[in-house]
View 1: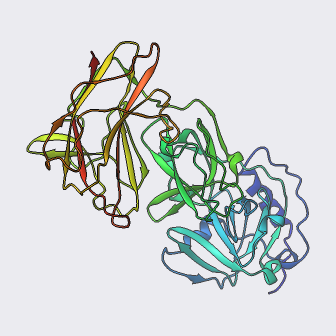
View 2: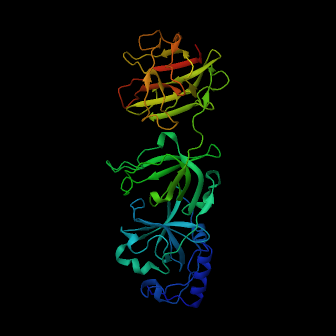
View 3: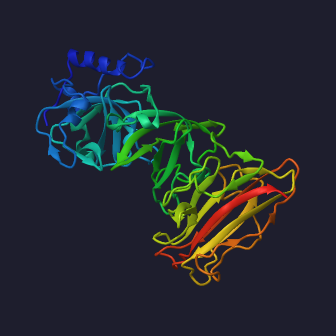
Length: 436
């Protein structure tokens, strides 16, 4: 490939591009490396948005025109969370640039201005993310060189609901967000089996959420997620219809504030689900928890003969193990309180006593797995009970502890088709917590 030397027009355009990112950028440009594409007479002639506009999703296009783009690296492979690629953005858009080699951050770390000759590369996409490549190690100098280093890119400050197609492969900042209670104090990925994981980030301002995907090969895969809320800075991406974030390292997660939306407390409670649950929809009652520990199914509303109740089952779940919790708002245990409820079993599997009820005094709204749960004894439906027959628990006395808040949790455990088919269906209705 013929070499390219950027003339004075190139320097003016480079300064213009850089000004579009941040007032923190040092405008004293280093001279580009005089080799490869940086030693000819062509100039940057396309924005990244213009390059992406040439692409039709689901197709591949070999670029034959003389196209040179410029941008700043916002995602590199220093931590191992990005593999054989750089994420580059200019003031118009961002794009993934794929390579046939690793350790790219050694030459092109985040904050590095890069110039890319696209002639001879392929424009394609992967599940909705436009990409260009592949640049093999032996010819890197023919396609890419670097200009100024150490640039500080200001991310776009957006909300989860604001994110759209134009933001894909760009650096974004989401504030007032947190990990869902199910994903707090969880490893970012599976560092033992080197498996990527999706964790969920939720907004404190509305009911929107987004996935944070982390590679099992990243050097922070085994780190635990923080408990609080705050701001996350990440590269925005998609996988089909799923919205995803990718961080460069855990310094991008600044969750130092208290959690939002913690558990609520009540002095008494009476819930028959008739007006607060809908048939075949996940239970979503203000102040109540509904969390999946294993498998995919939460407690759901179920309607039969005009009666609405809460139901949990492993039927149709593919997981080897299933565990889901429905947790009531906290209640003050300073006064002697009692619990009562109705339960039933449907399609019982012999030996599958999948429903239990517990109380915890150290549950904080996001630590089901680490909280201390004490089982409460009452008349509860089990695998020997008559199918679809409601059984009243009787009055279950709660512990008396002055100044302590207790949280009652209904736990369902089972297994799906890939386990041992412990798929009995359990229902809960007419939950009452009141003074004795």
